[in-house]
Image 1 (cartoon, rainbow, N blue to C red):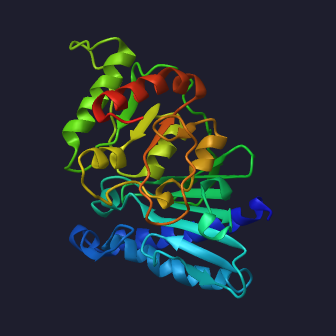
Image 2 (image 1 turned 90 degrees about the vertical axis):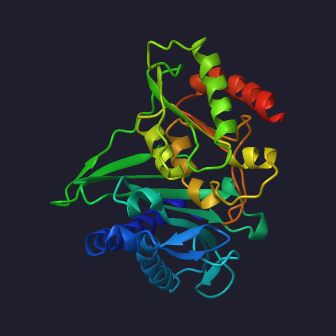
Length: 328
């Protein structure tokens, strides 16, 4: 399967989602866009997600006239939905609106995430992804959007589009080269109530050790709780963030509770773009992030702007997790 052939289709899908979501933001108010439509095994589906769903299925039906594939997506049945005839040639995994909670309140951009993987049935995993693309879904105040994509082992590509005249310019992809967190953005994800005290202790341990203590006279590390895993990766790819740690599944396990409020494979299906740009994406202990490409697996992950920073921070992260969670 020629991975680069899928990029135009992924971008075309995201263009349609972008147009539909932007129109919804203009036509509907926050109360309508933020209302709960469905609570499913994958995630909560809000009003704003419906605008994307209306585009996704017809697009896949059209694509299915020339290809046979399995769609895995937030809001779709857990086993996926087949399009085309015959055995699936590939798996398409999509998060139509990653970052719904910020966008439906018109606070911050969300992202449309999509990736194609070779199909291996229930054994299909992140390592099988051959092409990925992500397109920014802007608030009503934005005049530009970014889009990023990658395929195979090729360098990641970025573009910035002017929403007023349609002009497109190349977007420089350059993750931070800093090997410390000093005066940079670093986040231990702590989005929702539940486990905040544990996560705060872990964050303090990591930052205290990395900086050699806390100087109460200075703000030396900045935190950005961007409620979008794809958005977090984009910040790393574009050099705005240096470190992201999302360990919600480990914390919930430590607290002996079950929760679906975690990143899922569709949230991280564009990790290829980050990796091809030089960002290190792994599990919290430095192992490859190779989860099943489904809609139900809870994922804990770490992402570092570069290999040097990863080499410096990974032992600190591991030690903090062992100290607070007693985990290896």
